[in-house]
Length: 170
Image (cartoon, rainbow, N blue to C red; front, side):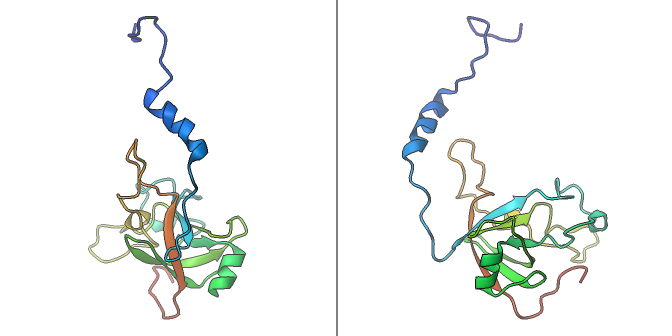
């Protein structure tokens, strides 16, 4: 009773997307950007980072600082090791994160978890932990059809931070 098509069937073909899908075969891959050589997944889902409604950092058992994950090869080129600090800069903003060298990452790619960079308590004091991925993504870089920002493909520059940077809980 709720299907209001002439033949009573669901229309699963979305005409606006049919040509878009067909055009993907000819689409050139994104060009390299020397100013922002890394592809950052800004908002990776990790253990205990399902969403931002859980703001009390004490419940996080792993990755309490929301580490920036890098491949071993990229970490070596940047002079970084697990536990070091790195600045991640995008065209929209920047943030400093602890580094985790991980063989699960591809060279040229980096990731930050979602759910970080928020104040845990409405205390008025700065008690945020990690980097807020939304502060690194631009509304200008988004899907043309749905308007969704490209959180999983954010061009970034990463550099070692040698001066002490306060990190909550350390």
